[in-house]
Length: 345
Image (cartoon, rainbow, N blue to C red; front, side, top):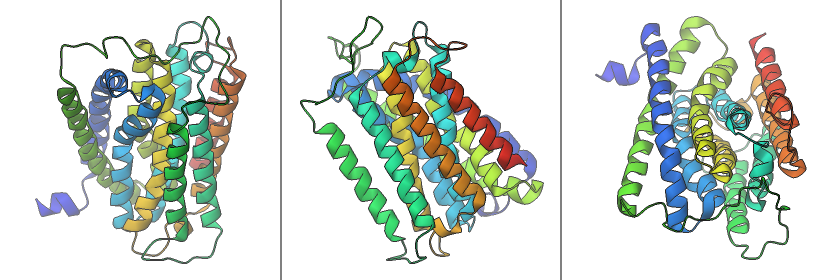
């Protein structure tokens, strides 16, 4: 048993675990979308705030564990690339959800001030991470000062977004806009709220265990196949890390919870940036930000560009686009494919 927990796994085990974790994630994420929609109504938080904070936290748990495990195992490049690579892959989930939404483009139907502000928060966090990589290599209590700044920036952003009872900006309502309004029944009286929370947290526990297994499997892939840590972290781990957001976003739009679909992705991305803080804490070789190489900085820049594109789509609110996608969906796919191509070669 100790060898299973700490030793290197066979390559066949690692590949099988990737597939198994992906399958479990898909099944659990469909259920998470239903639970998140009901709990957003019952708590009164609304789909945007609930999706970005609670929902985003649960769907990011696997990535948090992946980053912490790989950083503690002295694979800082793998830890860093998993965090920012997951952001890029998860942003691509918006394009997938857009294609699944019937009618107008998803960004038109889900326009809301909180979603725009969470996008701004994400850009700020990614910018701080880039600044840290080019700042002096110092640590305080084992953490780079940027880690403290990112936590404070996130907390302040959440307070700013959730404490505005009278917004000074609102999206123009059209016949295709889907307002974020709680259902009169609060999601149905058949189950107690405590029971829903218990199921929600139970799925979260499964996600945590899956994240640990994927991180261990990724270490084997790097050492056994010769693939770069940047590619494994950004593409393989990043895609598995992005599965919860992708599946739940598609499931949410199928339920008509379009605001939740956008918020879960953007909110999960904000928490994924904070994965760098977790990795910085777990890494014993100094600052995680300064362990980032060219591939990791490229990924961070790509995540910034993709977030900017998404914000543009939410502001422009194009009603129709190409192949059931808006201009932003096409650009998101283009930027992501181009980034993966550069990492592969």
